[in-house]
Length: 89
Image (tube, rainbow, N blue to C red; front, side):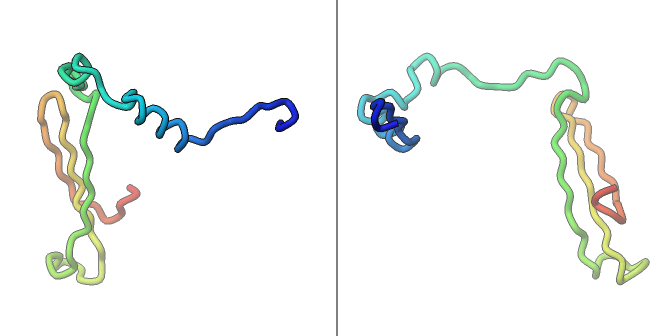
């Protein structure tokens, strides 16, 4: 490659060149434009969280681990919470 004078710059070099010439910044139009995901129906985007419950909370079987699964639909803001014995279920 050196004989043909083909050199591929690394990503850091490209970033530094763009930074030096002010090309890494957003334009005013891009800053003003709101980047927002707009859903059109229920179920398109759901936020999920899983939390392990403390063993002191569960009195049924103290050695069993339980998980609290929560879902929130981003369109309707409908929430669903369920207690699971296996987080892979």
